[in-house]
Image 1 (cartoon, rainbow, N blue to C red):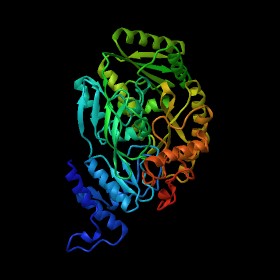
Image 2 (tube, rainbow, N blue to C red):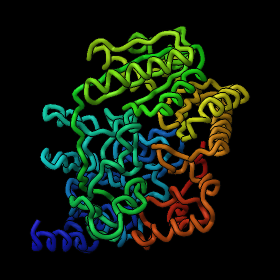
Image 3 (cartoon, rainbow, N blue to C red):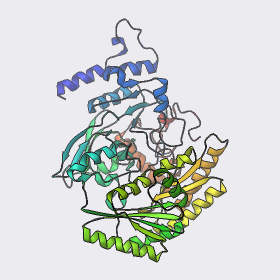
Length: 506
């Protein structure tokens, strides 16, 4: 957009209520005035404030409730995101960026009736540069759609969360998402080269760059994983990964989940770095097999899905090494996917595991902590004990290679008092992970879910410096307030608490 065009747009944004359309009553309430200004900047149909839309955008995929959305805007350009930010500032309102709403830590729940900036219409793949292995995309691009676009070119986008069929690149950036193949390829931060960001005051900044070593501080690295608390990403330059010439996928079954966990430790100790190492316990394996009929053994205590890729000779050596380590740890059966179709079906089972549990219970709480691989078996035993004590059914499916646990607590929210038990059990699972030397999150983020535990990992001085960093991007504390940094340490407390109802955690 030209400088003249930008000036015209920003001039229209600043039109006051006195300029409201003739023949219509001027808006009088704060929400009406905010809506009028937003609908001046965007097409009116892309600014929503109806009850159904507010209800939808007050939630994400987590179990946390109590969000209250203000107007929801659907921008299609960076200039429109700038306009929304400036209007929200003029009205003293916070903003919450939102992708597909698949987050599991409450990061996209709007606290304090902020303006919700839904980025799903900014969904264009802008440029693919195969020579430099870079793709420029907008934040609303679906993760799997990007890989499908790249596949004919011989490339893919390596981060592959289980929700990759619906989650967006912008959401992946916000939460530094991972996925099964992050063991070898790294989480989202390793695949973001640069990004265009609209800061909370409406200014645009380019973080990072296409040079191998961009000058200055690594503000790109600061922004990835910031969960919308530093601004809104409007364009991303992601690294694309060449498809490997050879891939082997192994399914190993074991009598116990401890045997599977010990196999994982043995594989890593041997020096083999697989593309993925995924473990599922018997309950989730049966649910998956009932759902997709992928050939998973129903009678095994646990299964390990291991994948290696690279040059054919090296892949064959690594696959044989994994099989030998599995046998040494009591593997009951070792099967190699014989065709690409069989391999895809095995991965379909793993990627749809969370959907498969709907046949057992209507609701689940999916946790996300990381523990040292040497502590996997011990922490898993504690997870089962905790679930039993709170009379809850738990299933375990996790990224075993990097110790990223995902216990699923199954329940029916209609049962009286069950949510109290679920949250109490979740609290003990987090504490058990931290006591084992683990960390709060591997890929889901902190949001409101882990906010209260930040003091277990960081000192008051650490949290103070995190808040100072936040203020450097957002001096008025209007970007996704009430998230990540715990209450009492955050500049955004007052924004978050302004209109928050009780019951966020129930």
